[in-house]
Length: 286
Image (tube, helix red, strand yellow):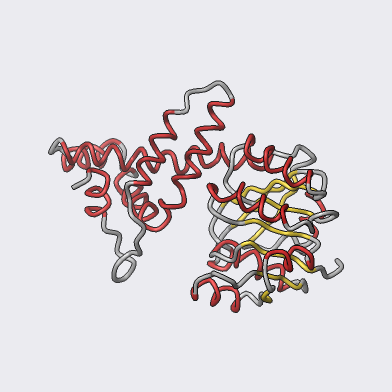
């Protein structure tokens, strides 16, 4: 493996975790400090990232640029990278939770600017958090991107090339998230309705008898909604678009997006306590 210069946009928890792995196998990884928060700067420093002057500088110096951002920012970020005028001959990896149709639209923008598009879909927690993370990649240079990570058998992270189809990784990400995050939103909505009708304890009692995993799963879903729901709303809308493009009803995941949007972003209180009552109050608007 030849060391390369790689751009990371942006080092949030997931982006910083991936950047740290790339830095750890000998690559120089750049980021753009301008306008980013102190928390992001701290993550970038811990991951060994090097600051670029601005976006144009990062793209010009990098042979590969990774985009890891909220899904509703993916298209704008790809356009900004393409507008630098420096993308010719470079690989752009869009590792965001977007629909196959969105992936194809972004690919067209990247290719019009002279770059090569690689589609990415991430499943799991950030590798820096001892996650079991898989980065699925598709497109003509997907195998080359996999090679950037060196040893593919590390326990906390695996990069997997799916082949040349430019939107296969996004399709896999959408169908996977449709279940995991869609059912979490459904459980929270069900429990909120039960509370509104005054039969929450009765429902929990029946769950204990016939569906013993559901109370804990709904508590876990509340914790995820507290910390990640703000990001997942956009992903659920991308999942809904994926279903609509396949000729299937999109209402399941449009509703899931609304559930997550009703839960303000917050951190668990003392000892990572999950405030289920607050989450259900958020959903009910009380």
